[in-house]
Amino acid sequence: MFVRISLVVTAIGALALASEAKAQFHAGDVIVDVVDNKVQTGDVNEQGQPQFPWYVWSENLGSAGVPHFSADPGFDSVSGAFTPGHTVGLAIRKALRVWDTEEEHFHVIPELETLEISRFQNFITTPAVDPAPGDPLPSLPLGFANSSGSIHIHPNYFLNEPHGNGVYLVELEFWVNTEGVAPSDPFWIVFNQNEPQAVVADAVAWVEDNLVNPACPGDLNSDGVIDVSDLLILLGAWGENPGHAADLNGDGVVDVSDLLLMLGAWGVCS
Image 1: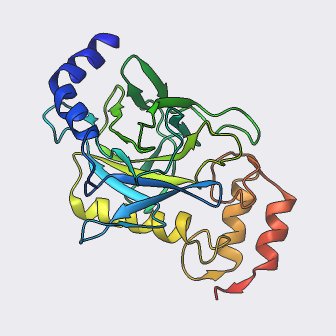
Image 2: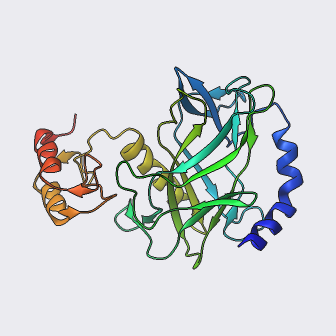
């Protein structure tokens, strides 16, 4: 595994290091800042300026000529966002998901594939199941804020064997080891492995509608109404079921608490 990382770093290392030294925002990067003692994630607008908040990015694996790999998105920051010398990093919040093209959702955890995120000789991998609430998350130090309190860092993303074609979703948070500064809200990267861009667009739209701005969390079949159809989905997922959409309170178990939340929102989504 380290041999693979070394080859990738050799191929793109000079470009990545040069990019980190530039004080400009790159379209497609995750822009980070600290606002009210919390990390915030943003995107780059058409004028090349950061816009906050922003939560969803998408990238094609293999586009740089290395199969199953990407070095995007990178992480950039506004000047003075961080305390110089302080460590910044990523944490993986949930297991990898793969897009279900028939049902059109990201509820499925792939049986074999995982996603590895690395920086030089350090790496983390998406877990087989979602971590339970309160459990430590896989966490990767990315580097240090420079003398101006900013960063520009590109980690490596690699889809592990068997490298199945599909659209994959990873949920992350960004952190800094500054006392009193909380990690970012969750954000998501959609990685495309040899699927049409129209499928990627549908997957990104689903993330925006169901994870970033869930208008109706109990609407499990996304038909705009919470009714018996959704209740049957919830009952079918009953029990320990971390990551399932029916786990409305996110505690890893579909139970009476989730049922009560669904019943409380019963009817047409507002």
